[in-house]
Length: 390
Image (cartoon, rainbow, N blue to C red; front, side, top):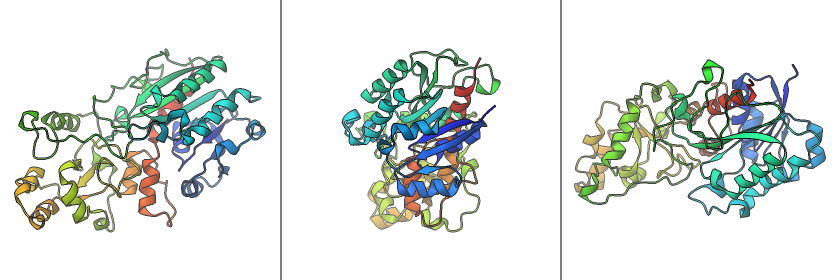
């Protein structure tokens, strides 16, 4: 059987490519397209044999697309028009222009691709861009299924709720019963490894925003604890940490970090953001969504790791408000709070150990690129489901 010819749009650092490889599909990327020069450096470093087109998608002509004769499209259009924290300009946002171009060009192709996988943020499902996509799919004779999935569905201790859409031409049915509802777990199919997974616990996944929702103290009746979290939030975290179906974070951490001190939270950040940090230990079975601002901004960009596992968080936070800044810092420093390293975030996102970054890519750039990426394991499983037939 001939290898599937795959077009990778908005290819970024290659998360979709990694997912395609992990799925085991007989496939070949015939073109990857992205305008981000730094992301393209990383993509070329990891996939030197894949044809990479460093240009805007609007700049690709119908003739160029026809010449690629592809069977599958993998794409992650820009999410900024649809995020909660943004202006939610939807189709009027200039960053949505390239996606609208794809929707306009696809019906005019000489050969309609058989398969489509699209990823975006939660919020896309209620956008006008999504409605345009569905209209195009119906016009071209596709059937499809929409999902809202987090890596927690696969036992990965990282909340990263994302919208996914699978589409295939109606000549080949899905291996499961599709529905017009958005699925929050992988569907059951004929293969045992694709059995239904329990959906993530409500509230465990956060949208990809640079500012996630932070609880604020509202008086004693709200049950605020020593940090800025309610008793309900603490209960939810404990429930996740006690979930035997979830891996622990230590499975994803680097065994030997040469200079871990470079990842320690600076004193200024400790003093300013101590009460809103999401602190996890290596033995925890959860972490919040890492965004592109991680390592640079603190609030709402992802969890931080407690290096001194034997120190009780409550003891470090006890009576903080009565202490001087110097005393606060001394107490908080006993926790040895640090950022996850870029490699550790890549591990949580499912990137294989062989995946790397060119040396010239800075730590800040690595965080930004990973924050804009996706979970490889989720994509791999969806590709397997997409290609499976009755």
